[in-house]
Image (tube, rainbow, N blue to C red; front, side, top):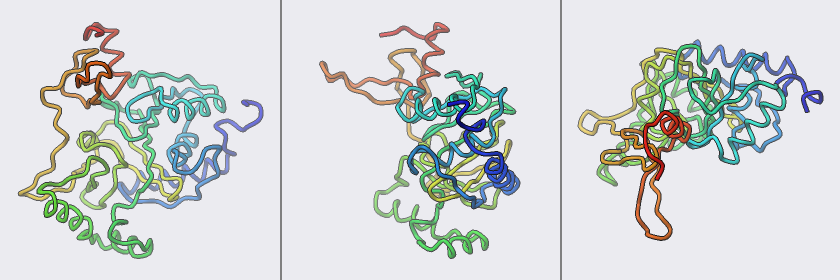
Length: 283
């Protein structure tokens, strides 16, 4: 397959066009830059946007990590990692700190990004105003005018209906005090990690043909009211039964035999690293 395709699958012209859109996105934090989304050997909606960004940026000296909802071993993560490796020959890792490029679906790794690392997030719906306005032309004008009352209205309606800002993922954020942005369907727990991250964070939506970005050390604030502040999912009192970690994002599981509820680190490579370093006992 290495001989059948150009390095990183795309022709050089396609990679250059995607890189141009990415550079514009970095220059205007939170702004959705349209791009000519290419056809991929995977279906749209399964990570084509993030994969296109990754393939346009990857170099022979890079080390890739691919995760899907916290794990490196899901079908989606393995398939995307195999495609990247087979068309580039680059090294892959499950260690967050070893990777130069991390492609993720629905999670930000537990270990903070470092300078010169790139996090690429797959995005199914990049437009935070789509729930209140179906017209792309009108949403672009609303962004241009900084008119985000629709986003605030959605949060207000949740409070009126449920007594709090419900929704476990894709909570909108204000980037660099200018653009309201969808952080992709990451849990609210991950939203604070967007703020002043040392690594660059890129967002690719293949089906919607949009790329946007959060440059390093950029101010990112989750939308919230003064009397209803933003809150992440509480992990208080939870302990990983494998590595003993506390204060991380957990999966809640149930033993099929005893029906006992237990918790494990959602970030599987973080959990494995703790185990290898003696952070806990395998139960």
